[in-house]
Amino acid sequence: MRPTLFIGALAGALSLALSAAAQDAGPAKVGQTSAGSTLTDPAGMTLYTYNRDMTGYSNCNDACATAWPPFLAGADAKAAGDWSIVHRDDGKLQWAYKGAALYHYAQDKPGGASGDNAAGGKWHVAKP
Image (tube, rainbow, N blue to C red):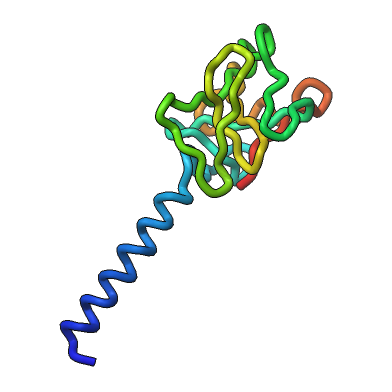
């Protein structure tokens, strides 16, 4: 194969791989927190799941959502791969990972995971 053809093919393959990786990246990232590797929002805040939720549905509303703010999705958010959108009772959209709605903990600081196993073990850090 001529060098220019090889470089062109390599560039095309790299472009496809990067495009696929960007689609799978989702709205959160893997971050290091006090609980180890967890899903975090772009600001480095740990994300949590709630045992009382059902796949694709949030049971955390009203006072619960004040203590555990949902990881909200914008109106233009698109589900892809392991990432989906939950339609909340308040009409807002919330991100879910592998069907589990994602939340912040109001008392956390970036890199913290003080909500892990809270409320009698009902809350857990979201693991990638």
